[in-house]
Image (tube, rainbow, N blue to C red; front, side, top):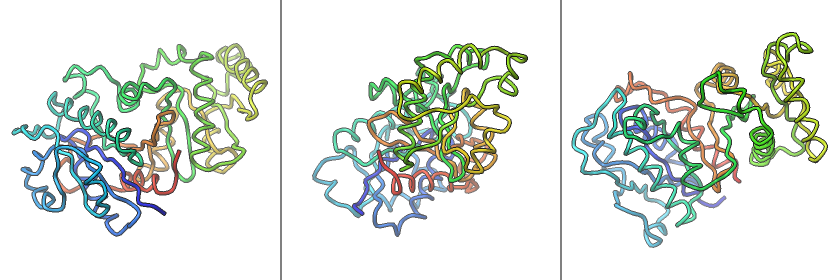
Length: 328
């Protein structure tokens, strides 16, 4: 296996991103197939609990082809080093801007230097908003930065995998995303996700919207008027069928018991409640539809425990290991 040079962004530096990143790198230090390239700000090394980490990295202002020939060094690409006061423990506009700049530079370098993939530590949507950045998270940022048209948020655990049809929107707008355009994108990306995971002839199921898949129209009409007709149209033109729609109250258990390989979820919490229930410490967020493989932990910034040496780095470790097991 060749060495994978993986870009890692530190996320919102007011949260646990730096800690879980550095701890994960320490945990994986003996893996000869992985070279991390960190995107952050050297200002964090002024924080007492992180001071000792500075000497473990080679801090550079930018990458070059020349330095990338060195496969053994952990490069730290320094962005925003002039920041003197790091706000810890709550949303902050400076941290929001920096978290975006880390992602922006990493995305540029992924293309310029043909890096292997991207792992992102958690960002804070409120910090982005305070910085006047109108994104709802990594998925929309990366979609914009890469000019990618059809992008989906997906989640991976060894026992449960799902692709989301809609993500960070109010619940009363979920029905607006039950269109051929959105659902066919989810169908296509569920197949792409299967390809990434090496699943041949995948069994893919669509979750229903209403209780009991509306019980033949007793509890809603969307299954009969929207979802089933679109599934029929898709299956008539595709060589990989999507099954459903199935009642969500049993579908995730059926997938957990290996009846299905991937579930297409219609909204955020429909997917995230079962994923976080069974895989809170090892689930991986995967963005499908980008020109490179991007993963992240499935949790947030955890401001309340930042820089207290408390957070688990397990999901970050799994996000990195995903790149060593799978590829586009």
